[in-house]
Image (cartoon, rainbow, N blue to C red; front, side, top):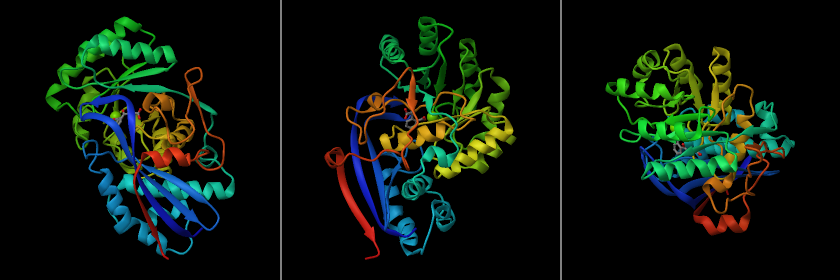
Length: 369
Ligand code: OSB
Ligand code: MG
């Protein structure tokens, strides 16, 4: 396959409600969409880098810049390539995994469309729908949180994840557990808001039978997480710390986590995400699919990934209307708490042109011509 043109499109989609985490508040999702054109097909990718560098060092303008200067040119210059040759071709550029992931995703989409194969089939999916969880932001008050959780449970979500931070942890968790009972699948995500000195405080969450606590400490603090694994009864899950199959294997060997959150964007793409799935499966470590408030494009790929066999916990892949009034693709709709795994060629979805134009902030075309 030969890449003829790469189009970078910056979009901004308003969120249906503000999303607050220990990192800050988001009112809209900015995203960088990548369209790759070959002689026979086109493919779409979504870069999950956010408006600021609070979740990771990557951010949307930075991702666009590195794509334009360093990532797209070698691919345009390459003769024939496949999605599997993208990472080796780009290995000379350190880091920038979210930018690389978007490009690889678009090329994989084009390649699979050309072959009439779905992401699910290519990745090794074993399910045709996946249970859907929802990530619930920090609220101004506990009653407001209980109303939000109740609304999601009425819609059928199978699992609730509460964002926590110092000052918003034990009380909201207790309130949700008391109100909705012991059967509710409940977990928390700190986005690295705590330190090793908070170990005794975090142990107070052990009373609430949580599925897991996600990324309590700094992304580089693997030994701190290993100490928490030893001192908490709540299983420790890593998100930000896991940037590759190697870092997943190392975290597991160090005893730094018992569960892994897999996000294709964070780890450099769907192919590396599948390797993480495989590494974790071999080690007996369950995984689940995280989310980055993706549009329908990223959601489609994440659903395919979440259908692999070791994705045994519900993911943060929610219906389109949990995020957006109007998604850029046909919306993903919850049915009995599940979302369907797309079956069409490639991602199985594509942006709706009119909607895309409405949310587009800028477009940049790169080609050899
Ligand atoms: O830590 O999982 C996270 C969103 C943006 C950045 C980081 C995270 C999140 C979420 C949202 O929790 C999950 C979703 O897409 O529904
Ligand atoms: Mg997280």
